Length: 291
Image 1 (cartoon, one colour):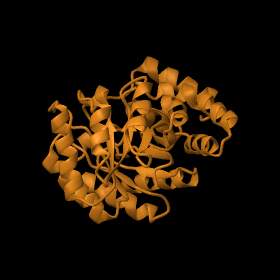
Image 2 (spheres, rainbow, N blue to C red):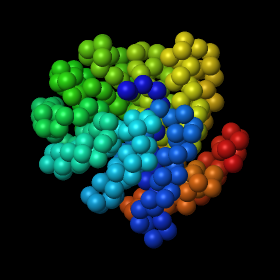
Image 3 (cartoon, rainbow, N blue to C red):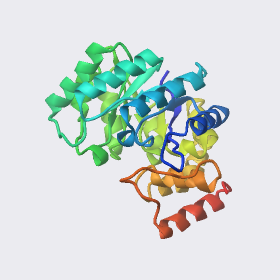
Image 4 (cartoon, rainbow, N blue to C red):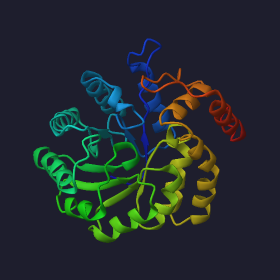
C-alpha cells in the first residue's frame, strides 16, 4: 500500500470559514486524475488542529466516500491527547480509511517511553495500519530511531513519515527496522534522497499543486529511471522550497488560490501570506508555468 506519492491534502474552507465539502471533493478528483497514489486528509497541511471533532470526522468520511477505493486513504488521526487520538482513529477505521497517520503528541513533550506507550495504546486498541509521523519542528518532541524500531515490532505499526529534516534518520530507521517497515518522506525536498536509501515514497505538500510531477518522480525511481527521477526532483524543487516560505499550509493554499482552485482561506491563528513572500511564490508559479 505505502509506495509512491500520497498527497497531504489541504482542507478547503468557504469565505465564512465553514468546511467547503464540494471543493474538497473537487480537490480529491484533481489528485486522482493527476496520478497521486493515495490521499492523506486531516494532517498538518489539512489544518487538523483547527478542525472541530465533527469537522475532522466529516473530512475523513468525505474523503473515503469520494475516493471510493480508487487509491488508499491514510487518515490523519493524531493529537496531543491519547484519548482523542484513540477516538479519532476508531472513527477513521469505521469510516473505511485504509490507515491512520498519527503525529507525535505536541506540547506535552512526552519521553521516549511515553511516546512508545502512546502508540502502543492505539495499536493495541484499533486494528488499522498506523503510520508514525515524526515532525519535531512542529511538535517539540522527537521520536528517536530506536523507539521507532521498538514500535515496528507491533504488526499494526507499519510505517514512518520522516519529517525531521535530518537525512540520516531515514537511513537509521531503514537499517534498524524490519524490511517490510516503510519509510515515507515528510519533506518534498528530501523525497529523492530518502528513496535512494530505501524509502518508498512521500506524503507530499507539493502534490497539492503538481500531483503528476510528484507521482511520476516516484514512479520513475521505482522503475529504475533515475535520470527522470532526478529531472523531476529539480523541476519541483523551487516550488517545494517556496511552499515552506511561511508556515504550511499558508503557501500551498495561496498557490492554489493563484491557480484558481481555492479561495486560499486559512483559519486563525494562521494568517494570510506576507506580500513579499506572496510575490516570491507568484514568481515561482509563473516561472514553472503553473499560472
